[in-house]
Length: 68
Ligand code: FES
Image (cartoon, rainbow, N blue to C red; front, side):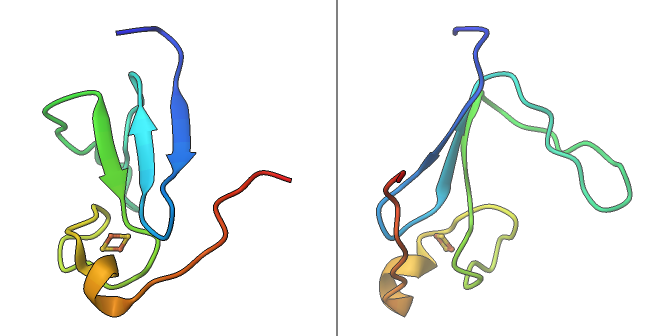
């Protein structure tokens, strides 16, 4: 895995986080992550926040995902 960290907006979906990035909760506790690629919910519908559980599809979430 590269040392570079990347966050990619998936079309009408989550943020895809790649690379060795620590994910911390509001109390400063670090999430245990099983790999260096994970999806963070940006639609607000996931029942497994902060991670995406695919609920954005059923919710019909739409968002711009193109850099300008
Ligand atoms: S972005 Fe996938 S459940 Fe929210």
